[in-house]
Amino acid sequence: MSIEAITPAGAAPPMAPYSTAIKAGNNLYVSGMLALDRDGKVVAEGDVVGQTRHVLEAIKAVLETAGGTLEDVVFNTVLLKDLGDYGAMNAVYAEYFPKRPPARYCIRADLVRPEFLVEIASIAYLEILHHI
Image (tube, rainbow, N blue to C red; front, side):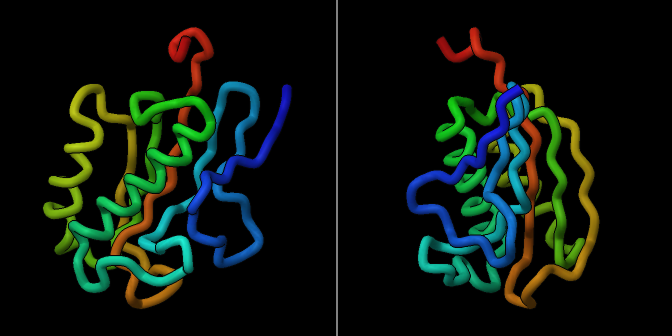
């Protein structure tokens, strides 16, 4: 099985020693994505809708770089700074996963910096024939 690091062009720089994503065979493991732009600056500070959209767009870019789509996501881990943002995050999330949403869990957690409101990590299965 081949293992390779995946980093889309224009991705935010990692905040610690980790890869943006790792592709192992047909499995893609996307690290927890935060609302950071390519220069490492926070996007949509104070706005969980904007941060959720940015995070899901970043995950989408990782998947596309690896040859997949959001339809290939089988599991998400969602971390929210405030569970009061659950409904707003879910409204955006539903736009990105309108049919057969992936399995997931969502918990409240202190994120790495106080200005982050949401973090999402994904696992995808990239079926080779699906993308031909």
